Length: 278
Image 1 (spheres, rainbow, N blue to C red):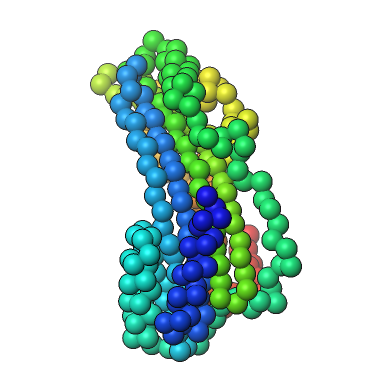
Image 2 (image 1 turned 180 degrees about the vertical axis):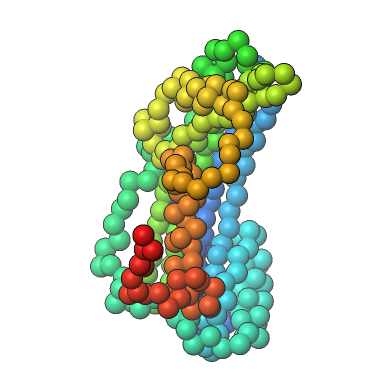
């Protein structure tokens, strides 16, 4: 399957060059996903989907554009590339854009183990059902439970990319994300709600469904009787689940694109020292 994607990418690069592109980078992807959701003992949602897409970066006469299509029929790809190159020619020149220098390409592309062989054929309906049932049962062990929603998302993606200056690469990857949300009856008409989740590329790396459900329940129980705290100045303790979001807010403005286009608060701070007022 991934070999077919690489052939499509290579053909698109050749066509882009024949239509006048100086350089081209083409990535073709296939994504198959399944989501199963169970709420209070009943299956509430089951979605299975397969999608394909082609992303193209073009350098035409000093101009650059990036465009995507989901129609990979030969005639549709040909029309897409023709329009994409015409649109790129209409843009302003961008001297800061250039395709990666071939000197930076590795002599051999390392093969990263991101695809779980045990999930090569996907998760069976019985296995998916067992996960969501166990998640719910573990999270329901409290007398104040109002509702429990358990969910399992699975995805397998394949991708191949080809550049006009000599690079070829492939990638296969799997992801599995179980989660559960719990709502408890609090004092009066109040409700406490929380949950827990986990994610991994390999099924064997996930904690057990029972452990995830129990943690979700424990976190929800901890919210019972909670009240708004006073306004004060002090040390803030951040839940580990928020760490990735906080770090990403610092990393996103540090990209070359953000700095080059003047959209980063890091601009001009390279090498500068931060001095504390304490």
